[in-house]
Length: 122
Image (cartoon, rainbow, N blue to C red; front, side):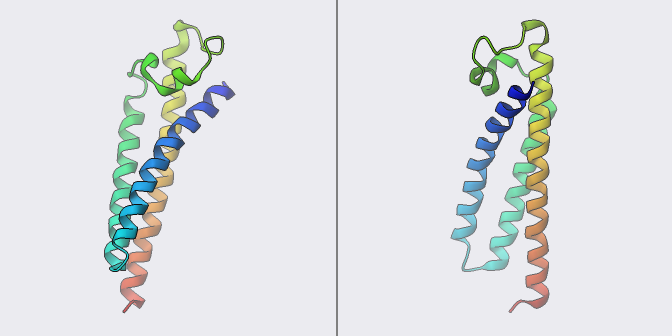
């Protein structure tokens, strides 16, 4: 089970890393306008959060054979077909929700910076 959790975290973290790279690149492009940069980062982070929540909601109904987690597992490490759908769906759901929380906290931090910038900014 620990191997499944570690691979699920790796798989979701890698996808989130690419999303974070896209958000960061967009924010760098908007750096001449700090309030707009922070608002855009917050909105894009919330969009990533919502995407992860939707993926978590559908994780248990998605075929376990079509997941990256299943591909990452060696054939001898894979759970039996009888329990694979339930176990992999649950492990992926937990990973998606954990990373959705991270994106939500990041978005909240960006929104706080927008407020601070509005109060004490230029």
